Image (cartoon, rainbow, N blue to C red; front, top):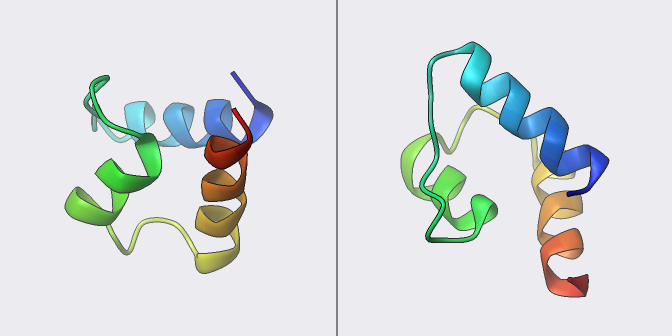
Length: 52
């Protein structure tokens, strides 16, 4: 896992939000908590997911 992904997962879990392991994290966030992270963080996460 990458640093950005780890940080996002820690922030979600700290707030008792547990994302689905079956879809990409960026897609899940956009569906369920779209306003939790700013655009720059989401862009960085999407870029990481594309490069995996």
